[in-house]
Length: 248
Image 1 (cartoon, rainbow, N blue to C red):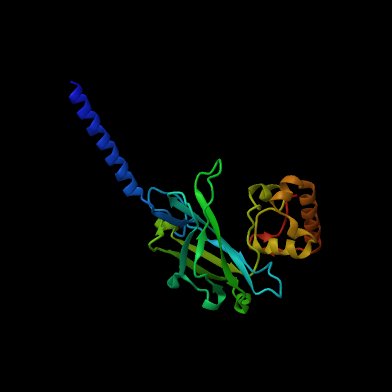
Image 2: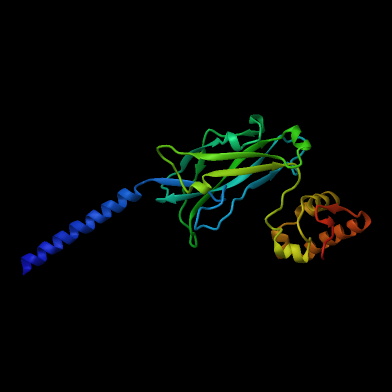
């Protein structure tokens, strides 16, 4: 009986070890990188839809020649013990930007860092240089730069629907993250590039309005919007939705 028990224990240990080795071989040391946003709608049964990153030269001074588009990249696989370099390349058939209108680095870096409490995934942010171009003034819809991750020995490409990133470059300001549904209802109303541009150009200090002000200093935020409302009363304006109004 003891011999049988010992044999079963040894076989069980071997089986457990084999499973562990299979897991390691399956997972290995591979690292998969993909973009946070979907460049195309998720395949069934996913419900995520395609999205792009907007970048603008509106806030770039006359003496500046470039700006950046910030892209969030996500890592799947074993936690990094050291920084991981990866490359990007242009998708020419989807890109309308000219070669001189952007500058790609030879490599980008996903930085290794300790896992923080509350983390649900590994992510980092990379910065894509965009160069000022005179033709943008004549392009209301702007132009597009599409990038994709290049697989190599160290990096594999993750989810296909997030293997590319679409960057839309425009002249006018783009909707900031803080302009959410509450701002729509209680402060500035429905977002439009025309409205935001007029607000920034005609209200002193409007560029300081952000999420922190709205949350921590709502009276200051409201004062700025009231100034804009006063300006609109004196200078009636329209956007694609009709007469520009603010609900405050």
